[in-house]
Length: 167
Image (cartoon, rainbow, N blue to C red; front, side):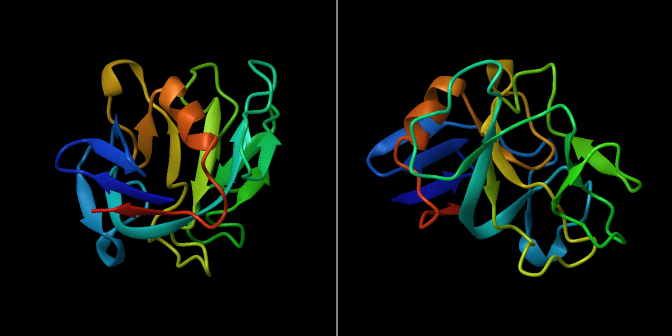
């Protein structure tokens, strides 16, 4: 399935369906100019890797994508000088890491995109996900976000052969 994020319209197109989406609070940036923590959504095409979900809030979503249940000690390293940069880690972690298991519902489902991961280049950005949107599609820290209902619809069609083109 072809997935295109049209950042100028705030739309995610998947197959023949179109969904509203949120992007980074500071807009967009070409991949090579992105920086850790810039709050910008990186332009480019990124393969869908795998996902996480809050098993305490709902059953595993219907999908052919590999999904892992989140636990309270799940994190994502965002320290550019660390060997685990842009990788999942267990918290507490000695370097800077984002908490994935949250009270807010935005990380109830997380789809990991292959942004800056093969191999990670220090400082070019980490934790670019497709995740659940805030109320009224509030901006993200650089990810793409859709409603939970839309995420569940997308998941039923996702595989690790899919890619997300952000333009």
